[in-house]
Image: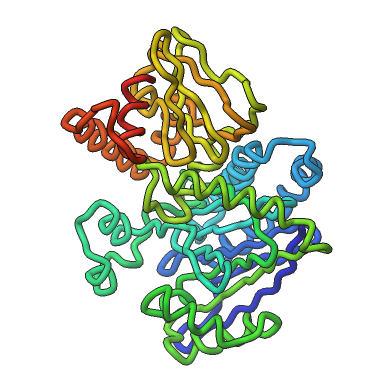
Length: 418
């Protein structure tokens, strides 16, 4: 699969010059928006330099991205790659500011996307945004790095209060104001027809919420959407520079992707059924999925032996497993059951064996990957630890009668056995 994009920027109604810059490079499959920091010297210079450096660094690493596109390299290797690109841009912009009179404290946002075959990788700093367009729905994949947005995520502000907060546009992260910066990343498996919108805050602030933007998006055709939405944002607000980049995923033979899409949907469905990850938004589910390993087992295959050290969550995607203890009847489980969730907190020896009763696919999340996820995404990590704690508390009080029926009873029994 490949993407084709376009971009458009407008100075707006009140600004004298445009501090936004964008990249649309269909050859590199690179799309980015940088917004120079208002109120600081040479914000447009910072944004111009950042986009130039990002394009240069992605081109320099072209072979590594191409290896992922060709299936010769694991997509998870893209994360450190784009972090390095963003950090290089941050360092060079910072050094320029430090050595150039009148350019001190300049900086910008960076939201970039690289499409690499069947996956896309985001690198994000600041309050420009990345949206995913999928099946007529719109999902915000980036988090705003502003004081007000951080307060909303911490529970100190409501989303309604965010609109009126004086901290709404105060950045907590920016590219170039320090020698290095924390970079958000997200690896996403692509569906044919997926679309992406990358925009500056001058664009996103023109809409009250995602639903309003989605309605505007669905009113125009894809070939006209970029200029049409910038024009509508200008009518709605126009108090800031307005920039929008759109990119649409295409495939020469969509029907050839049907099996892959079904597989992705199955794995996403397995995660969303698991109590630990239920009701997470698409961004967080995609983050968890990229941390999981997926493996197929033939009928009769052994997943675990009694007494084997277990340090991973096991989620059946399809098929049936048997939990086997000596002298006891096997317990059959399917995709409605999660195994070994407590080993994410503390590894322990398995009290039973696990066998595949038929061709089965499972997702596993190792304790190491889970802890890395919690450290790199602290808010998501706290939520997952809370869910594990709530579940354990409920399980201690729950009926564990081995004769009980239904998915919840099987889940409780599985926890006792594994």
